[in-house]
Length: 226
Image (cartoon, rainbow, N blue to C red; front, side):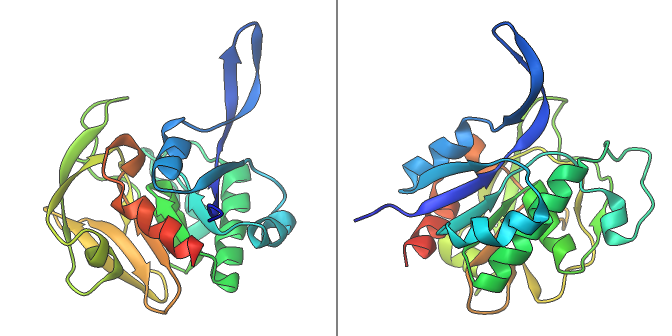
């Protein structure tokens, strides 16, 4: 059986390797590894013009919007908090267009950390620009418990309270139109969101690529295979 093709968005940053120091499309290797281990084929989607998004999504079986920089607050009508990071405008424009195209076409979609926040913003939601307790230390992935909401898509994948790898200082505030919160942290932070309709759309606030639990990504790959 042909494995489903899963597009994963990338960073666009200055990077050094060998003798080179230049702008590069970057993706931590754990993302494509997680896709492969979950039964899919991974392809990188570096930032492009938003007008190309629909054509790109049309060639995919599933889409992953990866983690990364804070979403620029202007995207949800807010002034930047001093603790909000610098904008990644090329990523914001490209990934919002990809999300819109995936939603319009019914392409299975998984948002990871920033990707979940961007999904919420794409549907008219807002973000908490800073909260404490979800980053262990700079550059260190922490862990905390996440509790699923019974009856949700996420709960059908992971029905029990589970520890997840986490690294974020922003979170969902007002939910976007058509989204339901499907998991929470112990402090009440929204940790997963999903659409109410029949399409397979899920966002998780944590980083499944940094752990060994395949269930969330496998859910996306299985939906893409259908």
